[in-house]
Length: 628
Ligand code: M6R
View (cartoon, rainbow, N blue to C red):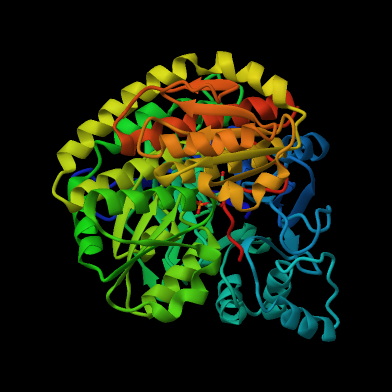
């Protein structure tokens, strides 16, 4: 996945609609323009766009961080600077924030097509350098398009799918008869696969056009100009108002303002909404890493979930309860949360459900129908596998409950029912607080199904308080444990019932940020193969709170211990099988996952630090995976 941003200083300022009405935005023509004219007369140079684009890229860096670049238009010429490395490294080499021009686009890349090289970094231009594109997504038919252009003598500089876009635009622009808008309208129907892009042309002092199909693109209005970006985070410091483009819509930005066209090319008025300030709050608050900050935010996430919108929750709960089959679909951490949701639905509401990992969902689609409810769970709301599954579900007539954290995302638009987590922006690539938010929400949904929402809420409130107390004292024990185990090559995590997905999640955190092989499994499965791998000193983490699973999980841990394992117990009760005890408070049995996951996240965090890894930027991973 990649981050894209464009910014154009405009001569129009946008007046916000009144807060109590959906009044359309009124462009106040000329205010900014007057300032620019006055500045010009006073000999003050017009402010440049590149610093704002660079700042936006820094805020998008969690979406990809292998290369970056900016292009701007100055005096009718296109300038492009790009390189491999993190944004700070590219900026140090290329002085990205000093590029002249009042209009600029930028990109931070996570490689999919084409390795990490300077040539493959965005922005990409056509052969003659007339248009420049930043792109997120995959052009699935790029080979065919590339071959066609190649046959016409067009030379490509990169190995990316993205480069076909500017080359096609330039071809349609021809000798200058067509406008960029016309070129975009001719080219878009030829591009297969999901995409969002921003194209900038040097013509007419600079025109910037953004289009999306499948991948998100939002427009932000600031006092200084208009932003286009794949994520509201990129401009949330500067813009208070925003609109999301829908599939096929086009935003055309010039120095005199912005216009919106629908997929038929008809101009439309879009009603902006306020930029959500909680989401916009992305500082590290003095913590060394976002991951640590986000782990410590979990108590407030749990309590915030307890104060969510009743009506949305009850609507979704009734749909789930009334369905013949209920299927969760999700990837990674969101899938682990779904596995816990499945236990909640069964235990609290006696509703059976299944969890199908999103990358496999398509192979089950034959059994979906109008009696099915699909619960699509995704922090980002952008994961390609989840979106593909939801499309299939909708085609089969199933109803979809979207559970997302990012407020403006593709999955939110696709659901028949929408449940928002409200965890605020999660920047660390390793998901932490959104896992806790997801399971808190499933806990409430299960209670809403049996008309016990209030009980669910007060239980969550209690769990949030206990989690807060636990987090206060945890670091002291986990840091030395990490130092002791940092050179181990394998770790195993076991748990039963509602705790087994916590074991899987603990193992996922360990591998993704500390690069140690870790496996999580139901404790009962250990003896069906994995036990062969236990040697003297192999760490086995047993999640064994004092619930119905306790005794059997302890027995499984003992089976490992007698074969030499170093057993780390996560429990509210001590056991002689533990070599190290991570003590957690007692809660009502279904709430243990909310409490038990935090020590495992912190253990992985300290392990990453002990091994010299950056927990916020694990190698080879991006925050959202927008390719299949
Ligand atoms: O945005 P999503 O919840 O759909 O993302 C799913 C996975 O890509 C994500 O949970 C991934 O596994 C995280 N890096 C886990 O920490």
